[in-house]
Image 1 (tube, rainbow, N blue to C red):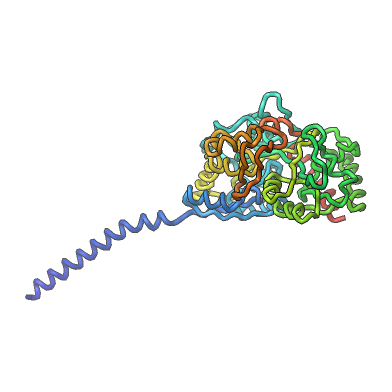
Image 2 (image 1 turned 135 degrees about the horizontal axis):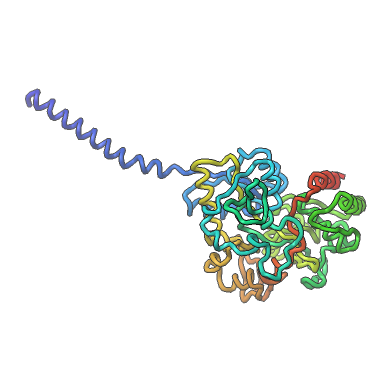
Length: 424
């Protein structure tokens, strides 16, 4: 083969190889970029930062999720002081005023919330039904919309401080093997937490903007203290309340103060307590272990809470876009059905209804008797056949809110009193 042909062939091979590499690269580059997942850091509590939720969201959205669950007080402290440490924050509406005033969160554009029109009236107007009790304190609708002057208020605007999603009413749980079962809304009372017969077997949540109200409702129910407005206690009212509580603590009335749902489960499971502040998942978990804990429906009314999902003030660009995708995912159906099985509600429940069995919907939302055993999110039976949810239907329960988790005008003073009480 002469030299000209060899060179010509070599050039042809080089050209073919170059073309092949270019084509291969053209196909590979988009594939490489498609495989690069955006990571979203979420700071919150064990209530919503659960592994099954993380896995499902990652699968549905094609993103990486980094969950950092902590106790409610720890979460709020970290979020308000280090907004760069998270992209999304999940907790309760009583944290909003602190986060907003500290500059830790940024406005959420209502137009980017895909299912906004489906969100029910609870957070939009303050009442789930026209005849519902609004409840004292920080009813969520009062702190949802961002006003032109930068404050949080009732008039609707284009920007909101949090995504309305998970919510419920809380009270206390008690073991019916040790405390006789009461009648919902009739004999069950917050006062039981301070009853002499339960001395040494009582636990309270160690969260100032929550535990204070459990104890205030209990003290009021027993006629030990009175309040002009339990959602905005004065310094003198707080002094009176904590004077009562100090005396009870000296008498060893309280067995402990829990900081997380797993810890509250452990308190009841080990027999350390027979009655305590509780959240619904803890009751479900204990029932699944055949520990007969009832979630009370106090005659004085519930302490209401509303979950908030907030954007860090430091979240921008692609991560911010993904944060909106995750927020919309929470209202897309599957998450609402998942949390319904642990006793929580979602702000647009009808979208989740088709993902629940008729029996599940009737039990959790309608307050009807279970026609069969119902399983919780962990796959274990948490509701026995024939059971009726304590407190009744969604509308009944959310119509009986005595007070919402709240940051009172006397917040700083209440913190001081709380931590003196805890450490005394």
